[in-house]
Image 1 (tube, rainbow, N blue to C red):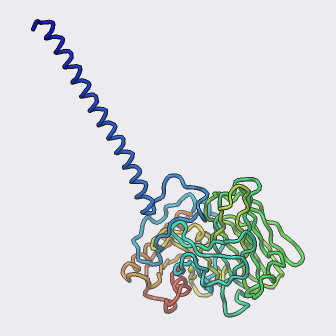
Image 2: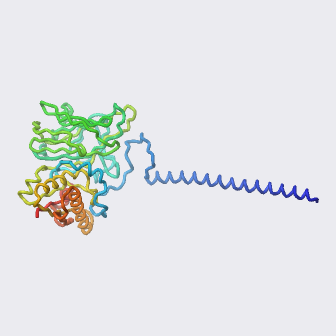
Image 3: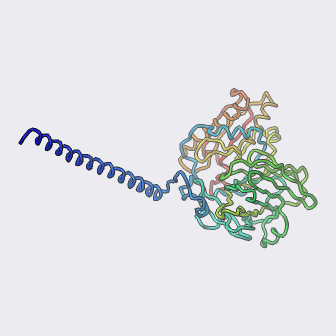
Length: 420
């Protein structure tokens, strides 16, 4: 075989080898790509099965509720930093709502079954049920119009002449100019016929449209319009607070007071809510929901009570469950304490934290001290010298009652300000 033939055979062999190697290379690369796609699909399926949320959700998913998760009702979880949501707390710097001190109705829906009607309420018209949203339970309405519910009480006249009402409401993605949500509140107490409610217009009416909240307070003779304000974030929870003290009626939405009537003449017995689903021409799956309903007697007597008894006790300073993180709607009490301390420069306070009896006693003792420290820190940040305040935690050691139900437990989760 001559030299040229040998070179030709060598070149041909190298060509065959190169093609074989390239084929194997591309085959392996294709296999890796296929494996990556399969692994990604498997991961997505695992996420679905495990209840994990992807970056995007189908807006038309039924009721827009999130997977049910365990609800924390105890007081024995480890604490985190004292104040984390500084921006929202700053918004409440001028908040003046003071919640009543004695809770007569409290419903965080903790022991309710998903899909059932809430057991502490009566249904007068429409429909409502308990769902899981944002790791908590909430009440959603199921009919488009006139879902009328009222808390269950043994008496028809339970509010009296000094009370507060609070709850959170979910505002959905009402984007279009024609979209709106509605809430009406009636001071009629326990009733047996919803027509007694819907036949009359609400004593208080909230309208959420596009990005504004409007509405009114109505008496038998006049209608007083709300201050129209931007209600803020959509697809989000907002706080409604109502205070009534001997005919003085005030309405708050989040940190803003939107209604203030010095002489509300309509007789008040109890409270009934009428909620509509959002009106949306393009999407029928928007929801209206409420949660954390609290009705209490009292409110607005802090200064007088400190003068008469040397202390002020409140269960209206609220914290994240099992933590020492102050909820923004608690800032009304803290702002008032700051105002008192600025007026009375010779006054000092000991701040005492208390918990209910859920969980471990040692953990509750630690948590109560951390919560007292959180209140002190919030007061100091508003301009009061830290030397004027001391803190103490008593945990569950000094209950006001037997801790036998949700109302008693809520009354025991309290903060005391003792004048020194």
